[in-house]
Length: 312
Image 1 (cartoon, helix red, strand yellow):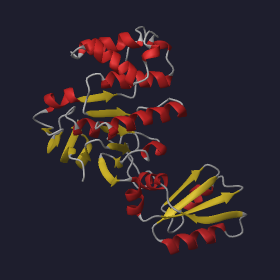
Image 2 (cartoon, rainbow, N blue to C red):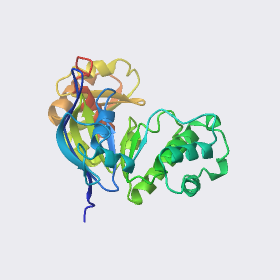
Image 3 (tube, rainbow, N blue to C red):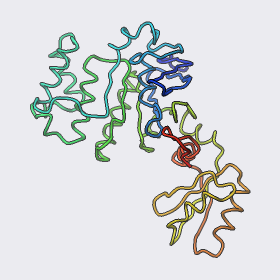
């Protein structure tokens, strides 16, 4: 049986001046779900997340968050939300424990000393409780920021590119914690640029220029685009990407490590174009299953740049 909906919105729009930054957003998120938002910079990810939980008031549209109206009941929604921004915004000259105690005071957390102690233990910070926040590594600062969002026991957690600038191990540890929170019933909305993190989400949304272009599980999004993908490997690949992009049937071409991927929806035309273009070159091409990254590069290249022009 599906979990109840934590978020159910439709027709959400938001303007900042003459810029239409979110366009007719419709989305459903279930309780305990980790829902990821992807898209280029300026695509409306952060604004969309804030609209979904009443932190921003939409210009038009309707919906509910945690059973409350996102327009009329935003003041009742906000105390049930934890929001972790991309930039570390706690106090460097306070210890971990002092930071959490100060935040608990600010938000009027009941029995704050017990809440601080509990949060220190749950986030693995108890042994460092007296360490100054300014001396922490990126991964530990990230863990402290997450702890500060959880002090008041929110039902909904918003994470705005939470792992930017931290090492791979810290990222893995962080995501283990996010899945633990999800299993406990907390709903998580997260924006990210990392494909491996996107694949850790239960469902995803891809936005560009304020519009929702695709949503679903990673498998559903890849399948819906009906892409055929070829991997091209060998020497002297430099400059080949721009040549491939001009070929009939090639809708996406991009570098992937030491190889290139070329994708399109017309399988026969794609294969014929690639074989003709690569004839006589000491290169190897083979069909491969399209990945989530192939899908999102395809979506990005086909979308308009928020500052004008096309991304292809």
